[in-house]
Image 1 (tube, rainbow, N blue to C red):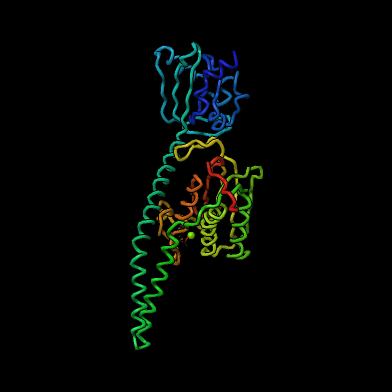
Image 2 (image 1 turned 120 degrees about the vertical axis):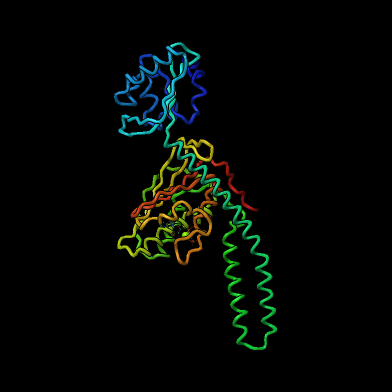
Length: 365
Ligand SMILES: Nc1ncnc2c1ncn2[C@@H]1O[C@H](COP(=O)(O)OP(=O)(O)OP(=O)(O)O)[C@@H](O)[C@H]1O
Ligand SMILES: [Mg+2]
């Protein structure tokens, strides 16, 4: 087949996030798109001119029947949500559509939508909307509270000057101190206003910094496991903001393990490359995944669905802002945070696209 013609015919399928396999009546593969390569872990080179059984076990008759139906009925065929086992022994839940390719006589498009993936995208979408609502709520609340708080503090100071009895000043001091405490909380609630400084940075440099901050705060009782993919490229980020976000997450893990008074306190930092990943309605060719894992007691059941909300805390002295801030800071980098927690293992995964449209900040002369 002419290479150029071949490319044109399949062009539109290259960037689809669903897995596409084009094959003939005998199930010989003519084309697969990049999503198929990543979902089924088979390269195009291995697949093309091979039988579809390179992907799945014992499914030849299943696919042959479907193709016969498509030919006879001159219509596309759909199969909703079923499990299929890949040759890599992975069981995945998919929906499938088979259509005849219009441009050619003896070719069929088999399109797979991975259901787990769909659920993940929907969940991520909800998290993002929630995060935007958080930011709005914080801004409004801090704005509403800050001004009257200044007035309250000023009035208490004036009152103190008028009081002749020292014993009464104790009360005005309480008002002033509590107003200051509230003011600090409001300041933390607002995402820092400093101008961002974007620079090409290595993710491991950031993780090493977080590691040393955690070790100095929690002493060396914590053992660190570092499983880094050193081939990850540098990317443009605001270093300080990423350190803050990852520190907030790692600190929670360390605090949970310490409160649990467990003998072995272990924190792991894992980095990996993710390819062809979809989130926030965008497909990213490559992204960096950072897993922050602790072996603490896990997130309390009643908190699990709301830990990213501001002011939600399970700690007596917590303000419940750490994760909400972390989520805002990661969103500034067009990334997302996901979380899975069971007793003994809590994983926070941060996914950051490598091509993020952030421009390195120019040095001031
Ligand atoms: N790794 C973890 N293990 C167990 N529980 C966790 C973990 N991470 C978060 N949590 C729970 O989620 C809650 C919210 O965390 P968040 O960082 O937002 O607030 P905080 O730690 O309570 O207060 P702050 O970070 O503002 O000092 C925590 O109070 C804790 O109950
Ligand atoms: Mg915290």
